[in-house]
Picture 1 (cartoon, helix red, strand yellow):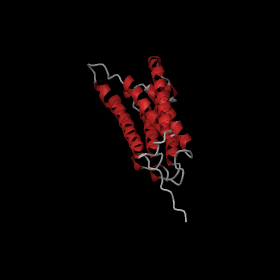
Picture 2 (cartoon, rainbow, N blue to C red):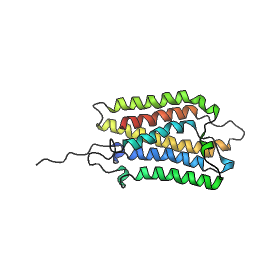
Picture 3 (cartoon, rainbow, N blue to C red):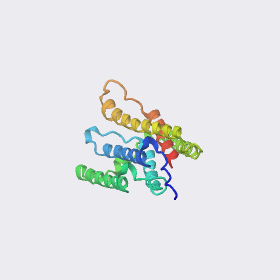
Picture 4 (tube, one colour):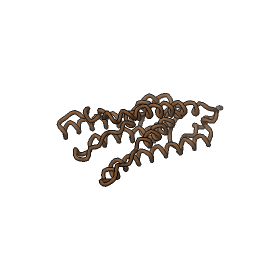
Length: 204
């Protein structure tokens, strides 16, 4: 009688797709938060978030391919499709709330400022470089080794902490630097984009 094969070890020992689901939700959550900030506290939406929105789409595409396959439970053990539903429903609710509270469409808030566009070449390199490097590394014979899984786990933690740091600096530190220039986050955001893209590429 054939014995069941053990499920592949996953980063942080969570069900496949759990970290990607968390990162995708955090990326979308940043968009939602910045869109719903009070008028007097509004800040431009960072350009790197538009690039990371591609990772949210990649998360959707990954369902049925590298997430919840081979008998593995869905991300975080929740009902299948939970995070996809939350991302779609959350976006609809935020758009509706913006229209209700501001009496205007959120589209003007989503148009990057001209000076932000100077960052797009570096962000493009970071995004596609990270995705490509992650995809290549993730195809190696070490893919299911404990060492590589631990590396992915550490990268995922750095990515999540990096997004949290972005929120803290943008919302709580920069607005209070009245006598000093705000912290320039452009290089930080480019590195963070590369790290997150590497993780998604290595798990695709």
